[in-house]
Length: 137
Image (cartoon, rainbow, N blue to C red; front, side):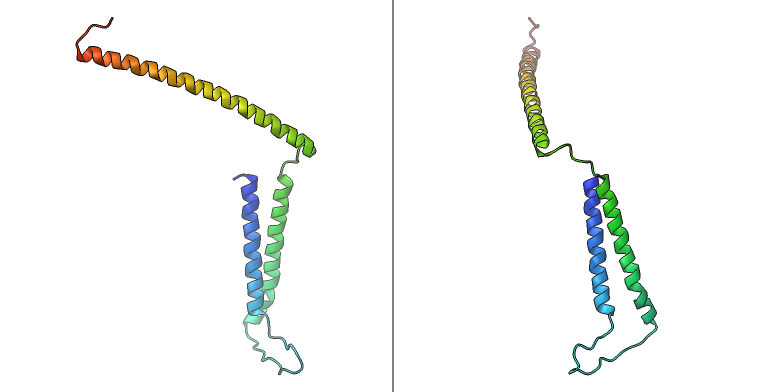
């Protein structure tokens, strides 16, 4: 897998972890009194309270680990060659090279088509000679 695909995959992992973390925190957060005008929310202590208290730590650790892996992948990216002018010059060189190669391929295609035409003509002559039982010239 190339580096860009790895970066995209890592971004997807980070987004998934963040989505799950926020959803879990929202789902498991204890009720909080919003205003003194409202009654105190009921508290439901249970055995899962310890597990719920550990989840944010585990999820934040997973997010930090994924972010560090992303940073590592970004650091592996190649450094750009020079400034914008140098890059534009290189692009122009590559486009010129591509054009030259394209023209050469077009010449080779035309030569191959001409050769194919000659082979077909010779094949047709051979078939005619076989059908008519003629000796080749």
